[in-house]
Length: 332
Image (cartoon, rainbow, N blue to C red; front, side, top):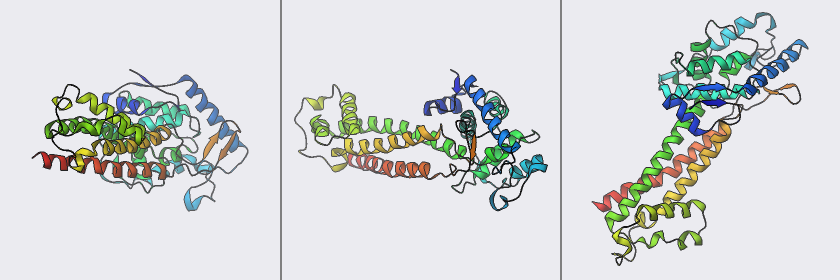
């Protein structure tokens, strides 16, 4: 199956298919046209003599200095100057997911790069060399270090146009890639926890009244009803349905199994919702508006929405794991 990048329709399942299963990637024809139009907006602004952060000016403290006369050297130094990442190399699936997210971001047209930049990323995914990327170096305001590793590995010796080095470095593609694969694994783990939880109920000869459909009706969280229904289905045919319960009330980790797993599902769903936005979001500065034909300073590189979602996921997962461990002890 080929994953087609439009800039707006990338799914978590697509990330897994490309990163771990080697699915091919293509750029949508409309995305190619959008990137050309976006680049035209940038070139027009530069031709008018407008100050465009990182495109006609320096970055950070040097934003007041112009760079029009030495663009190639500026692009080279911008990437080399951020080769400061540390730690072990990221796994290949993480780097592939990073390339995919970055290519999809460029496909939206909000970054102002030429189509050739996105095409080079796609070529790497479809059989090119995957560059080494170190894992540590994000400060929460763009994944500067890992992104510089990626840009250096793919674009060293490639002549970048105005602003393209900044676009490659100033985004959260690496963090989004890590988060996507972690959340996909979270979903797999939670499916396994439901199956293991049903087996725990069977092995403990638990009181299955806790799975009655009336219980989530009284506390109407959608995931509570769904988890209870799946646990009932997993225990379909169990002898426990036809025998009097061994206990009036089982220990808490058995009695609250649906509630704990449901709350964990809530955390997973929230993280998936944030990722559905981030996978199709512009994450840099500036933003090219195709509608108004302007290049706008922005702070879309801020990673707080993604970081908060991952923190929430971790908090939601902890009770499910500790409860599973406690049930194992009770079974022993």
